[in-house]
Length: 180
Image 1 (cartoon, one colour):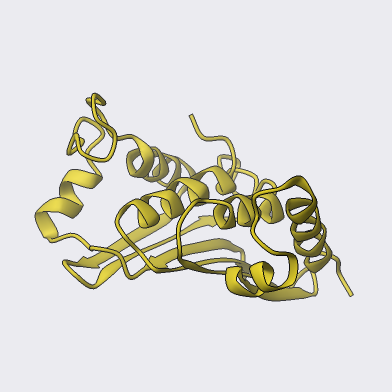
Image 2 (cartoon, helix red, strand yellow):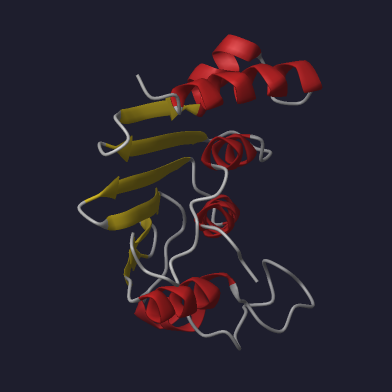
């Protein structure tokens, strides 16, 4: 089971990359009493029937994870949103990508914690492949906003394949969370 918002985001980004996305945008915003998040990609996309199957916990296509009989990522998210009084929307078109947007009430007793957002963004940047990840956080109540691109991180620290590069990227992402 997923514990924090970051668990859901990591799962959605992995889905995007497995669907062939070359650009994935992840955003988190805390404002107006809501914890809003979105994962938008330009991957293979889905038609209406595929979206319906993707939200069914007892369905998997068997291709992405051979041998698995169920797919629980989106159903877990939907269950958590419904339990907390949140909302969600998935829009997708075959060949054009998928947008998953959702929000939780900030004051909801069943709203999950945000989790380690810089760590989540770094994990998303460490997936294998040639892709751009744009990660953004907007939190006017905390007095902070930032947007980072995977390509900028790779230009600055090199491939995220050794401990030194990962540590530098982690320190930079964590510095973006500091309130001015």
